[in-house]
Amino acid sequence: MVGYIEGNDPGLKDEFVILGAHYDHIGTAKEVNGDVIANGANDDASGTVAVMEWAKYFSQTKTNKRSVLFTLYAAEEMGLKGSGHLAERLKSDSLNVYTMINFEMIGVPRAEGE
Ligand SMILES: [Zn+2]
Image (cartoon, rainbow, N blue to C red):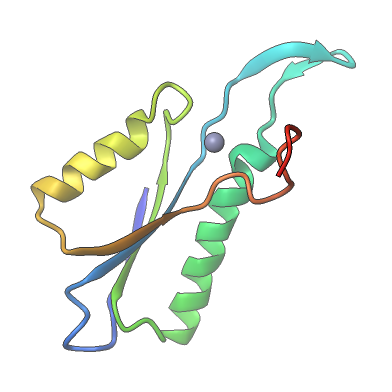
């Protein structure tokens, strides 16, 4: 899924900032307290909400000088297929990408450490 807000600076609006996150998760996993569904609140519902909140913010403020793409992709846990497809598509369209920021597991620190 891709959303778009055009930049407000005529000299910069042809450059794109891409904000992204994946919305799939691993499906089912080892049973915990009778539940086998891996809900994925942190990986990566937290990231998708961050992208949608940025979309809401920029749609209301219109303060972005560069154009912004808000991207949410699936099949990340199957081997980065969704983001890979998006990257190939944007390359084939010769999009002038200034930077891309991926939001991933921003809800809580990883159990293995920070
Ligand atoms: Zn993830």
